[in-house]
Image 1 (cartoon, helix red, strand yellow):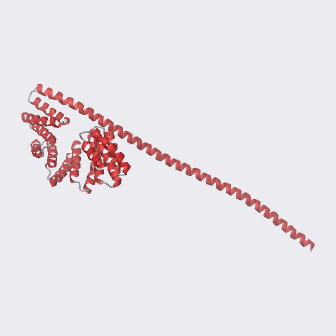
Image 2 (cartoon, rainbow, N blue to C red; image 1 turned 45 degrees about the horizontal axis):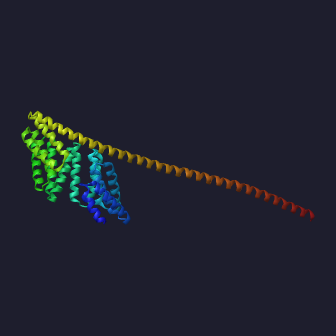
Length: 361
C-alpha cells in the first residue's frame, strides 16, 4: 500500500499537487505506524515539491528541511541532496543568491559522493545560472563548462543542449551575438531531436533576441513568432512575456508602432502578474525566515534561562552547604567547649581527691 501511495504521490506532484499532498499525508501516517523513516521522509519531500508548485514556498521550505533532516539521520544521501536542491531552487527564485549558492555547493558535494551524474549536471547548471543572474560571468562560464563536460559524458542531447544554450547566453551578454547564435542553433537542433517543446521555445526566444540585437528585426520577429506558438502550447507564461518584449522592441525598431504598442501592453500585463506572484513568494519566504529567526531567538533565550536556572540552583545549593557546614561547626564548637569544661571540672575534682588522700596519709 505504501509503495502504491509513493508511486501516485510522485506522479501527481506537478499535474495535481493537491491530490499529491492528500496522498502523501496518508502515506506519512502509515509510515509513522510502520516506523519507516525513509518512506516518511520521501512523502514529506513530495509534499514540499507540491507546495512549491502551488507557490506556497514558506511551507515548502519547512517540509524540505523536515525531510532533509530525516534523510541525513538515516544516511540517505540521495534523498538529502534532493531536499537541499529544492531549498536552493526556492532561494534562487526569491533572489536569495547567497543562500542558493551555499546550498547548491552542498548538493554538488553530496551528488559527487554517490556519482549521481544527472543530478550533478542539474545542480552544476543551476549554480552557473545563479552566478549568471548576479552577473558573475566568469564563475557562470566555469560551471556551465563543467555541466557541459558532464552532459557530454552522458551523450544526452537535452542536457548538452541546455549547457550550450546557457553558454550562448553568456556570449549574448558579452555582446558576442553571432557566437551566441551558433550556440543557440546547436542547442535548438538537440532540443528538436528529443521533441522538447519547452526548451525549444526558450531557445527560439534567445535566437530572436540575438537577431534583434544584430539589427535583423524581420528575422527576429520570425523566430519570436515560432517561440510564441510553442510557449502557448506548453503554457509557459514567463517565456510568453519575454517573447512579447522581444516582439515589441523589434516592431518599434521596424517603425511598426501600433504592433509595438499592442505587444508592449501584453508584456506589461504578464509582467505585472508575474511580479504579484513573485511578491507573494518573497513575502511568504520572508515570513518563514522571520518565524525561524524568532524561534531561534526563543530557543537561545530558553537555553540561557536554563543556564541561569542551573547557576542559580548551584548558588543556592552551595549556600545551603555552607550554612549546614557553619551550623555543624558552631554545634561542634559548643559540644567541644562543653566537653572541655566537663573534663576540666573532672580533672579538678580528681586533683582535689588526690590532695585529700595526701592529707589523710
